Image 1: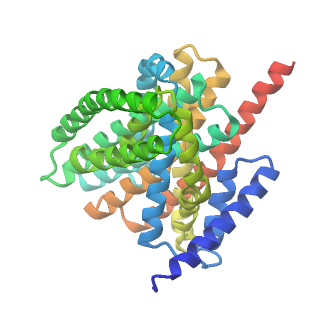
Image 2: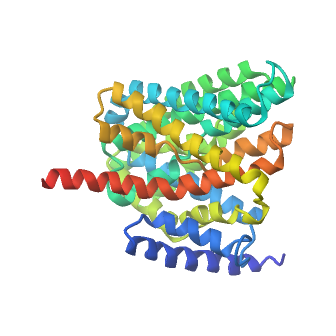
Length: 394
């Protein structure tokens, strides 16, 4: 592929994402729904105008990192600390219930296998895929509705970050049975060390940025330095601790969310995300999908996989939220907000393919889950929040 053809791909993605984003908003749906549909339409599945390339994959990764950095910047730290224990309980349920549900689904279709057998580990891995939560789509939807800073939005964000960490630990344990050179205990230690590192480094950088902010308020050097911190922590998280880069980016946002110019930094980040990186990320979800690979033999399992994955997140997270004194409507919002799957599910699935725990035919089910959850979650959230407005009016 010629180097300059990337400009053609970017032009098509940006235009298509914007057009379908506008159409989605005209239909009272969040803009991200239109951007995902745009990616599906222009991708290999239908029109074939844009193919998934390494360049676009990297652009999409920058997009999700910037999105999570912005989410961290817009987080109310006091509210985050207040919802921390609750978020931990919700995240544990959001991992455990889908893990059991996915394993039972596979066994229901292909029979119960003895503990320690190859088929048993494949069944458990199906559940592991379901544990992943992609909060980026929920974040964008809540931002569009102006609900990100509320108690429900903060709880979803906190639970999703914790869910991501627990999911990575579960993945490492499952893969550890398949590959003896993998050491699950080291991941637990690395995770603890990362958060210890984040607290220590975070305090130092908070003091440094607070001083810069007081000496050079509302200057462009502050968002530039903030962006550098975002990329640095995203790199450090992946490279040295084995934690997802989006967790590092979110931590960077949390570090800076309490300085005076946090909103100014978020405003500058939104320009980059809104203009280019955001549309590329959301469109890339559609680009990854190839509906030609779906046949009748896998379709029934894929439908069951999608239903179980969505229901187990809603039930697990929603019921725990209700037990934690949320009302039923807010509990449902939390359950729905946690059901999106995206880049984390893809990473888990690719790992399963590489170690032989997932065969390529089941990858279709994962893609279907990502598409259905990515499109349905923003729509359902919008309906639930609209219901709040009607109740207040009444």
